[in-house]
Each structure stands twice: as C-alpha cells, then as structure tokens.
Length: 287
Image 1 (tube, rainbow, N blue to C red):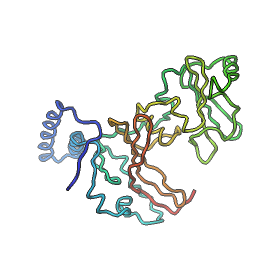
Image 2: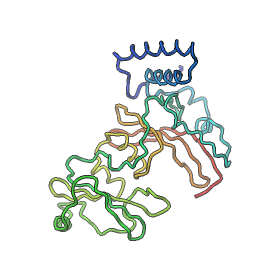
Image 3: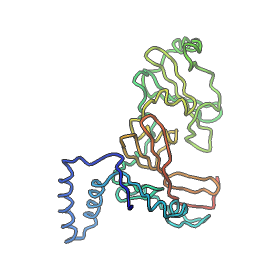
Image 4: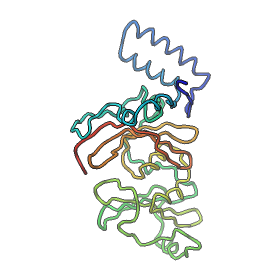
C-alpha cells in the first residue's frame, strides 16, 4: 500500500511551484560543482517548500513497536546523558513522530518572548488584564488592552447579580487562577475583562478561557491552548486549514525527568489532540 500522502495545510502556490523548482535545479547544479554547505542548506529549504506539511505513515507505523516509535534514538533508560536529540532547532528536514512524518520547513519557530499579550482576544472587550499571584499575598496586574477602569465602575460591576453577570467578581484567593509559569512557586494568574456593555468577566480556569479567546487565530493562541501559561516556548508551529500543528519539546515525566518532542493538533475553536511524541532525553533526576 506504501505511503498514503495527504496534505494538511500550507500548499505551495501553483504558480510559484515551477519557479521554485527552476531555482532548485540551478542550486543543485552549483552544489555539484562547488559542494558548498550554504548551498546545501538552501536546497534543503526549497525542497521542503515543495513537500506537504504532514504525511501519514500507515505501513511504517503498523510495522514498528511503540518503543521504536517513541524512542527512535534508542536512549537508554535512566541514564545521565546530557545529549538532547530534539529536532526543534532544525529548520529543514523531516521528523517521524507517531504515525506521521512532518516537514520542518513548513514550521515557524516560536519567538522567545512572553506570549500572553499577543493572544487574539475578543474584539468586544475594551479592557483586558492579567492578575498574577507571585506567591503568598503578592499580586500584580498587567494590562493587555485598554485603560485601568475607575474604582467606581468596578464597584458597580461587583454589585450585579449572577443572573445579569454570571462571571461576577469574587474575592481573590491564593489558589485561584491557572498557568503555573514559574515553578516550583505558586505563580498562577487569571484574567479580568470588561466588555463594551460594561460586563465584567473573570477567567480563573482553563475551561473558561474560551470566553475571551473564542477562536485560535495565531500560533501563540494554539501554544497557549496547550500549556496555558506565559512561558517562553521551545517549539514550532505550522498553520493548517483546520487550525495549527504545534511541535514542542516537553518534560513528559517528573521522576525520572524525561523529555520528548511532542506534536499537537489544535483546531480553530480550541479542540486539542496529541498526535505523537519522540523521546529526546532520559535522566536519573527527579523533581
């Protein structure tokens, strides 16, 4: 039956494909003469543009064990090796992960900056802020959109009964919020938003996040849907017709501490599924 190919997204524009192929042929001729590493990188990049984002590996997947699929580098159990086999630092080439092969040339690196300020919040919100719990009774507020509302407005919104405002403000409690972004401390956060109709919305758990982030429009939206914190991601993303593919290097166990490249699919309304993983590092350490 062989490989069953199907394209998920980011197809090459039909008019541009011949131009890319022509440029690729010229580079290959030059590389055959000069054998310059820089030309090889350009060749790999252009070849990636001519391939789909992801293909299914039905036969390969069926004929391999779970150990071979999850640990293709044959990393020994509970070793202190510091070698990281993650491919996230690569911008070209292919990665077999679970029953899929992905084209790294189609993926964009996440910028190493906090992502919360760039999330695609509802246009109906005139004010959005994050309240951070830095541990104990230390709180601070980061305004994302709008100006800080007057105390009188907040006071009036607090008095609205639940029948009018089901997200009525409640007193801050230490354990409220989500997204532990500075472990092992208790550094949670939650969101406050005010609509154009002066409705106060408080988001203190991941399930309610879609109240103010209704659609996944960017790679940062997709990343936040997975990890729900403001950390600097180590990963890549690719746009698809249904949403995004996200490839992250994650800690998959705490004792021993093990890491893997993990691939997720996040659709446009926030549904998420893990498609596969490749173990990249095993240690004897524990959190």
